[in-house]
Length: 437
Image: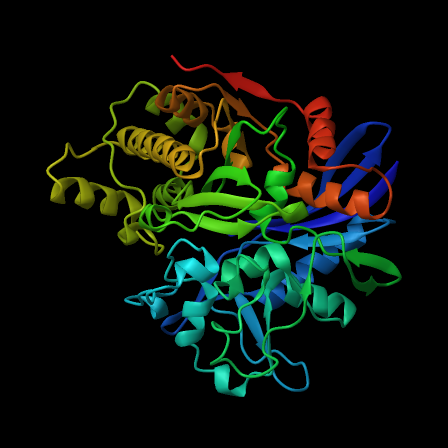
């Protein structure tokens, strides 16, 4: 058995996981968990990246002796460094309002293949006051890697979410980066590449966009699957070997993001369990009793991707206002609001999977739900019902597992293709099947 440490940073929490791989099995153990979330300073929403770095160091100490370290996180957000390599300011949160009203220029999709999201890095840079003073940009996992190792780079899977990569060539686009300061974007790394050392331990580039790592750990038996990486966001799509850049794909708001081993994650962002998290924060209550009540409640289907739901705030009231404004039945009780959220997410999952098949020509016979949302039995069953397809739920620790497996392959603890890594997950992790009713 070989051990590695996976740093997995989500939008609401982070953790450090110790992973052990060998003898045809993979095992992960959480050694440190810590909260993460936005910090409002005056009129701007930030990340507490120094606090995150402190927690990463704590977790790595608790992980003990390991053969590798890898870091993944959410996408698009970044830190800017000055010429000395010092951080110019605390990174701004992608839910900050500074990019409100930004639109995509014509012809952009044909180059970067990305679903339009106003918070993509390229649009954040249009609203970035520190850009004239910056010598280099590092996405969040790359920034933390730099602080650990002193070496800079841009991991490819996460770099594709910036909007600045040419999706055909897999390189920074000369056209899209022409207006940026020279040298702002570092050289690209790929999953499995060395990224320096920390206290003598190799730091390894993984699929540093958390969805890229999660898709590595989808326990698929063949390629006829769709995945839902379900957490704060639901990332819903299929795995391809080349991008889909048609006008119909752009109109359907599908994105082509880089995956591990040269794959394309063809997906649509759905607002995800953020809606439920914000409701629970407003009510200051536990989830499980509400889920039991929601199983017998009546819901109202609304559009979870409406931008009105993007910022933090009073989510129950916003859902009720949306339903009222669209002449729909207004959910009244917390159980009805929770059921409305889950019904709406299930329908959004169905629509994204149907569109992915139609636009890519990829056949889907099973839907894999991975990540924290795979523990939500009601959501998994409603998704199976809506899609008319079996749902295989798990592993809940998909992102950490994918991070661990890419490292393990790099240090020689396991070998093979993505199919081999997925077989390892399938044979060693608990999964649950939901059949459509």
